Length: 367
Image (cartoon, rainbow, N blue to C red):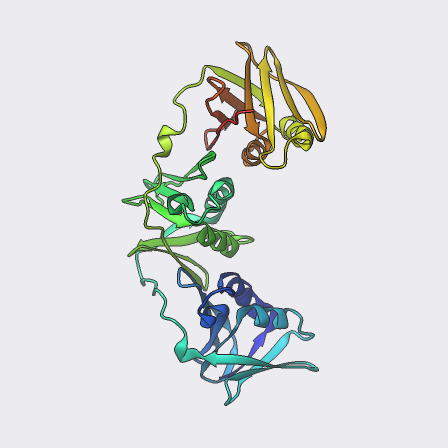
C-alpha cells in the first residue's frame, strides 16, 4: 500500500473514524481504523465498534494497492499536526505505516487488514432522502434526555417513527421525556418504529453537521444505514421495546401559564446555585400573574426570584430538578413557552407557544 493524499481530506475521514473506534474494547482491532487503497484514485477509511460502522471514500493518488489497520486516535492526531498539506503514506513489510509530510517523518505500528472484522454492507438501492436540517433539529431536541444507564436498554436510545409526512423522535430517561417532530412531505415512510442507540445518533449528527442537502436513510435487517456524499454509516438498532410514551404525556392540564423562556432559564440557573448538587431541586410557586422560583440548602443558603407570567388560576407549588427544566427550555425555539400543570405530584409539560413541534415532560420532585 502506497498513496499520496491531501491532509485536510484525510482528516475528514479520520475525524469520524476516531470517534467510532472503541479504545477500551477487549478486541484490540476495534481501536483501529482500516485504511485501504481502492483503484488509482480512491482511499477507503473504515472504523467500527461492531455496533456502529463508518466507511468513507476519499480522493487520493495511489501507487500501490493494499491495506492496513492503524490506531485511529493516534493516526488522527499525527495527521492533524503535520506541517505540510500533502502527505505520503506507505506500508512496510513489517506491518508498519510510514508517513512523510515535509520534514516530518512517522513510523506507526499497524495490524493486518485481513483481520479486520466483517461489517454490515449497505444495500445498493432503497434509500429515502430526508433533509439534513430536519434530522439535526430532531436529534438536538431529543438526544439530551436519553438515559445514561446502559443496563436500561429500552431507554438507552431514541425512538424514531414516521408515516412519510411527519417524522418524530422521542426519548426518555424515566425522569423526563422529549418529543420532537418535523414535517417531511413525500419523505421516508417506516412500517415500524425503530430505536436508535445514543452513540449512533451522536455519530449521525457528526456526519451531518456543517452540511446541507439531504441524508439518505434505509432500514434493513435491524440496521439503520445513512449516507451522505462518500460517507456511509451503519447503526445496529436496539432490539427492545420503547415504553408507551403517549401515556406519559398528560392529555390535558388545568393550569397553564405563559412565561418568557430566556428569563425563566436565567432565573432557574441563578436560584439553583442554592440547591443541593445531587438533584438540583427547587420549588416553583405559581400564583396570579407570578411565578416564584426558590431553593434553599441549610449548609449553603437560600435564593428566591419572581417572574411575571400570564396566568390566572389556583396557586400550585411543585418541586423540580432545575437542570431538567433548563435542558428542555433550551431546546424550544421562540421567546415564550407554555408551562402546564395539574396537581403537585403530576409532571410539568413544556411547549413552545407558537409551534407544536416539541413537547417536554419533567417529573416532579418531593422537596
